[in-house]
Length: 417
Image (cartoon, rainbow, N blue to C red):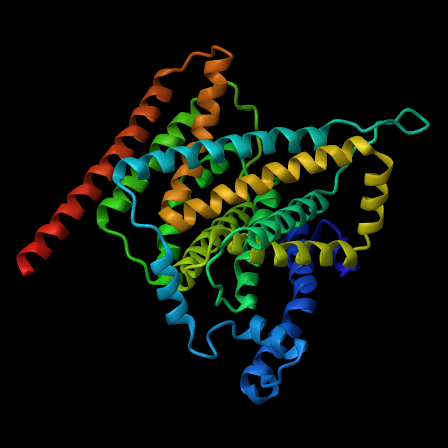
């Protein structure tokens, strides 16, 4: 695997050049396959030989929880109904709006601080060598591991010391959104090497559309036509606004290659699957946001640690952390921002669904640019104002059509009674 990961930048197959990203992607998949394939075979074996899990020992109970959860005993419907009864009455639209506003502010603040800290940790030197060379930390996988590890610990504490609904989820199902989240992050970072600025903007601005399409595949969820229209309108508005930013690096001369396009497509597919699958788990099992956070981060931290160990990088990362206390402090702050952001993410997906979450994260990019321009007193050109107006029109149109749809359903229900 190490040889495969460090292969030459390109391999010529006939007249076609295979880029190094192909090797890195295959190395990642093989690394995870060494872990995942045996686990999948064990799960399949025990599902086909259920009598082996009838014992009352710790090992049998652990396997039952991981493989069956509450599905084997048929308790999932009962647990779901019980958790639904325990839920509070639906809030008024005013309260829903207040909650959504709070979640938007929480997401914006958490990931703004996270982005600033991450850039600082990856670009600011943590000392100098004997010959005066700056010392930088460059292993982003280790930062992801620290983020997921602290989020797991925080979620475990919240689950242990707060009232939680009964959890009937087979634990192995948390590995699916965990794996897709890791792969989406990798594809996103790798794509930046091969795509130009226009492609980056369009891909980030149009994320709502693949989320809607993936919802049909994962959960059988369908959206009315006005949702697709509003999604297209919002994507256009965000694109116009981001393209208008005069501070953006317009000197970016990178052309979008086929590799970059494939990586961006992979990013959108994996990212869309993650939020939709998490929403499907919330819908089926009625678990809490902290239980979801615990399960997903348990697998994410495990996958990241496995990769670091398999590549022989964990010892060097730990040594760097021990040698630079400032880096340790920055890592803790970064992980706290990431964990806080995850809490807001899971609350948003659980309460409002993956589409609303994606809309928030899409508009968040425009909000960041807008706030930066307001703070530093930058002027907006006509294109920017058209983009802002388009985004607001799409959002108000979505609210209006949604209310009209609810009124129509209520009228139909009253007529039927």
